[in-house]
Image 1 (cartoon, rainbow, N blue to C red):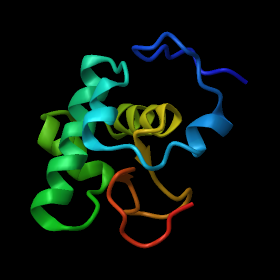
Image 2: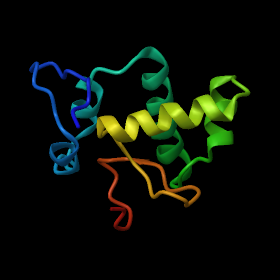
Image 3: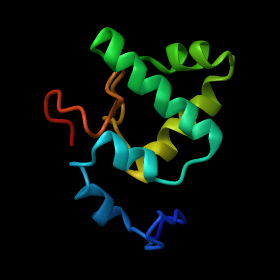
Length: 107
């Protein structure tokens, strides 16, 4: 299944290739084409990790963005996971993090 994101190089990544890109730096994460809302959510997650050294909840992300809907926030976070700039464990709270932060092993 191909993801419809085209990075600056014009190459389409499939999910297996994205899984291998876990060594992305902050600059490489910012080069991935994201919508303005996705970029905002990524920056919230990144700044939360830099400030508190642990993952934000969906409610924290929505509050910082000034939004009330948790479902839309969850969809944005899931899309960032598909793009390969964020990692998280399914069914676990507070595990979302940028891929360049190596804090425990999240597969």
